Structures are given as C-alpha cells and as structure tokens.
Amino acid sequence: KIKLTKKYNFNMKNYIKKNIDKIRSDFPILNKLQNNKPIIYFDNAATTQKPQVVIDSLKEYYENYNANIHRGVYYLSQKATEKYEETRNIVKNFINAQFDEEIVFTKGATDSLNLLAYSLARTYLKEGDEVIISHMEHHANIVPWQELVKYYGIKLVVLPVDDNGELILSKLEDLITYKTKIISIVHISNSLGTINPIEEIIKKAHEFDIKVIVDASQSIQHTKIDVQKLDCDFLVFSGHKIYGPTGTGVLYGKKKYLKEMVPYQTGGDMILNVTLEKTIFNDIPNKFEAGTPNIEGIIGLGEAIKYFQKYSIDDIYEYEKELLNYATNKVLEIDGIKIIGTSKNKASVLSLYSDVVHPHDLGTLLDEQNIYIRAGHHCTQPIMQRFGIPATARASFAFYNTIEEVEQFIEALNKSIKLFL
Ligand code: PMP
Image (cartoon, rainbow, N blue to C red):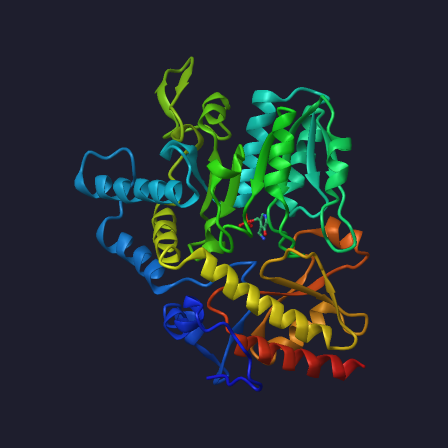
C-alpha cells in the first residue's frame, strides 16, 4: 500500500474517502501488480476500469442467457431482451429522461454524434444552415460536422476559447444568425478539464429556436446530469467512461425530435414491415438501433450505472475535486511545467506541458514507475493548435484514485523533470 508522505487534511466526512479501500477492492485491475509494484491508473478520461459486477455480468450473459433480442419467442431470447431493455430504463432514470424510448443505444459517443449529424442533416438542415461547435471539441464533435460541410453545404461556426481554456461566451450571440440550427457543445473538456456553462448555452440557444447537443462523455461520470432540468435536446456519452464495457454508448434525444428524425443505419430490427418496394420503419428507439446490438455490453452498462448509483454524485464530485486541487497545487510548485486549462471551473483532468520534456517522454518515464497517464493531443488537435502545442501529458482522475497516488505521481513528475532541467 502506498503511504502518504505528508499529512493531508482531507475531508473525512466524504463517503468515498471513508470507503475508498472497499471501492478499490471492487475493481480487480487496481489490485494487480506490475513488476511487483502497484499500478497507478490516471487515464480515466480515456477509459475507466471496470468493477467486478460489470465483468461478472458479461460472463453471466454468455453462460446463462445468450440469445438475440427482440425476436425470440423462447425463454433465452426473452430474458436477454428483458435485461437489455432494463438498461434502457436504468439510463432513463439515471439521466432523468421522460421516456424510455428517448434512450438510443449506440457504440459510443462517436457513434451517437455521427448518428446525430447524419440524421439531423437529412431531417432538418438545408444548404447554408449553420452549426456552432466550440474550439475545445473532441474530434468526434468536429469531424462529423465537417462531413456535413462537404456533403450538405452546411456552414460550421466555432465558438472561441480564451487563454484559460474557457469558452468566450460573450461571443456566442454574435455567432448566432437566423441560419443557426444546431449548437453541439462539450460539457467537460477531455483535454482541459473545463466545465462549460451548458445551462446558459441551452437557454440562449432556445431563445433562437436552436437545437442543442451536449457531449457528456466527460461529465456523466463526474457530475449530476438531468436532461429535463438542462432542457438539452440531445445528449451523448460512452459507456466505457462510466465504468461500463467498451463498444457501448447512449444517445438521449427529446421524443418529439427522435420521432421526426430519419434513421442513420437501416436493416434488421429497425423495421415494421418490408416489401421489395418499400419499408415502414419501426418506432423509436428501435428505428435507430439497426442490426444486432452489443447485447452483453448494454447489459453490462446497466450494471455499471447501478454500481455507480450506489454512491452520491455529490460525494464523487467533491472527492475527485479534492484530488484535482491537491494535484494542481503540487504541480504549480514544480519548475519547468505548466498547466494547460486553468479555468476556474474544472473537473478531473490535469493537462501538463513542459518546454523541457516532451509529453510522450514524460508519459514513458512515468510508465517506468507504473504510473499510467496519457500523452498526446487527446483527439482535440484544434485546441492544441489554439495553445500552440502539439500535445499534453494528461492525468485524469476517477473516484477510485487516492491522494496517496497523486502524491506518488507528483514525486515521479518532480524526478522526471529534474532529469531534463
Ligand atoms: N467526446 C469527448 C469529450 C471525449 O472525451 C471522447 C472520448 N475521449 C469522445 C467524445 C469520444 O468517445 P468514444 O471514443 O468513446 O466514442
């Protein structure tokens, strides 16, 4: 077990802090050794580790009720369908959607955003219409819109970001024109950690009858999401970043829009009736779930959310924020390194840049000490260009991380930097 080198006055009333050993024991990978030493996993913004209950649910599906869904009249298929649809209800309650059918299962946030771009373009947009994104978007919320520029004549407009990594919100109204139809915006930036004021953006957008998509890939696991309170029109996230299996994702959409929208993919399961001449599509959500889905993954996602909901999101947020603040204050004491993304309102992500050591070298040096961070552009090249850097070394925290791990990370960081100074 890693020991704290200095006393740290952590809020011991926090439930996560009090139960951290138990929480960590729920995640088998966290208790594995590499070269006989514990590992420190700080790449949670890329993907999170999975609790045993999620791992077990995948095995249980294949051992006990593996069958295709929605089609079978027999027990196994009905059981698989029931479990798959149970996750829809779990997600609906989790994000406080109004109806189960407002939850569409996808492969991940990327898949959800592609579905949206394609379907919104074909349903609502015409040549010359405008879509606003921000400078800090993940490629998954840039490239699909660029494709619409190419193939549908859509204009892509970008909300700028200031030197702290905050949206320049005062510019939003200037960018809105009578042709603006969609604003697609990240809630929490995966490379800067900025928490964007999406409530304000949604309110402003609705004054102009603009639909808003929220990319909640980095917020669903750190903050409370209530889609009715937010009043967002669409919201997307990936299952694997909230302790669920890879290859799973969610698209939430307001029922009235999903009903109007054309399907993204077509084929089996999304139809009511097919003749050789024409097809009548199924109702939502099936209209958007063509083909055999990732059944075991979606069932696992349900387990992940059930597991996550055992804890209070306020406790999780507070605990992770303490980790971030502690790490931030310690990094500020290190010469030769700076933080990219210094917004007042941040969550979970600490992106570092140094003129003396390349982020990749930093990543490799830390890896030698079993500390796993991410070095690169984090699929956000435009915001790297905005800051004039090729990459950052990013540590991102989850609620199973500890202050002792942060301490070790800081120590390793200090040692690594000293090699180059
Ligand atoms: N948006 C954001 C903000 C992300 O952080 C990510 C993943 N890094 C994505 C979208 C894409 O998620 P996925 O790769 O799971 O589809």
